[in-house]
Image (tube, rainbow, N blue to C red; front, side):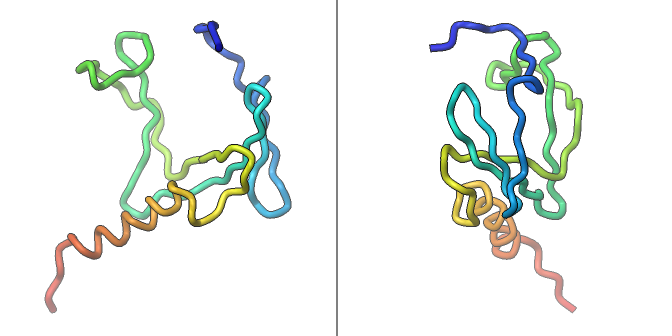
Length: 109
C-alpha cells in the first residue's frame, strides 16, 4: 500500500523505452508495463486538465477544471502483455468511427 500523497518526480522514476516493434516498455512500482501510442480519431481531442481549487481534479463534485493542454494522441499501458488492436483503447477508437457512421448525419446529394 502506498501512503505517499505528495508530488512525484515522474521523469525520474518512469522512463519508457521504445522497442523494435514500435511499442514501449516501462515499469511502475516494480511492475512491468507494455504500451503504445494511439492517435485520437479525426474530429476528437483530448485535454489535460487542472483543478481550479488546486487539488486533484474531481468534476463529479461540481469542481471547475481548466484545460492546460490539448492532445491528439494518448499512451495506454498493459501489465506484462504487448499491446494489440484487440485492447480496449484501440477498440474504443475504432468504435467512435463506427458510431459516427451509424448515428451521423447523412448528406444526400
